[in-house]
Amino acid sequence: MLTFAAAVFFLIITPGPGVLSTAGVGAGFGLRPGARYVLGLFLGTNLVAVAVVSGVAVLIVADPRIRMVLFLLSFGYLGYLALRIAFAGAKLAFIEKASPPGVLGGVLLQIINPKAYAVNTALFTGFAFWPDNYAAEVAMKFLIMNAIWVPIHFLWLWAGVSLHRLDLSARAHRIINIGMALSMMTVVVLAVLSQR
View (cartoon, one colour):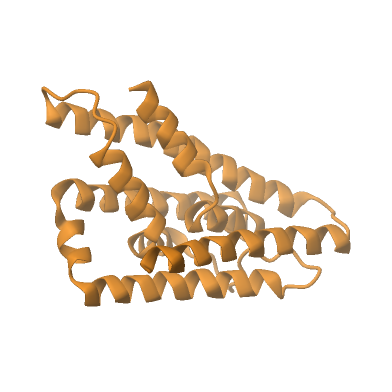
């Protein structure tokens, strides 16, 4: 069970669309809109987990056309976000929108987020610790996963809100933007390579 908890921690804390966009919403819109967005991500990631556990995700990704559509949507979103960050200049620009994405935006991001499917598949198909009672193991995995997922996302939200409050130099803004863009492009490149 401790191995599972460690895996959850390291798989969730690494930069991906969910945590990077959480920091962006915090930086761009503040704590309350960010908390609504995190609620959407939470609902979305649990929907993906239910799809993985129930086998629905296998049916979806078994169809190469559906898999390609999901891949293109997620690849397009990640690439768009990386470009927006890279060309933001001296302004912190994790996400620029007229209004915060809200609960629905969070849910939709997780549904097309390849990392959400990969993480949930790895967590729910591996790390068996209660082989005599699969239902209890799955329930315990949901509990452990969410107990780690929630504070990590609020930590990223706090980081974004904190960046928003800082009076950083133009150079510091550029360095942060380049670092965020490189992180997102790394995710995009890894996604492309995994499709080959």
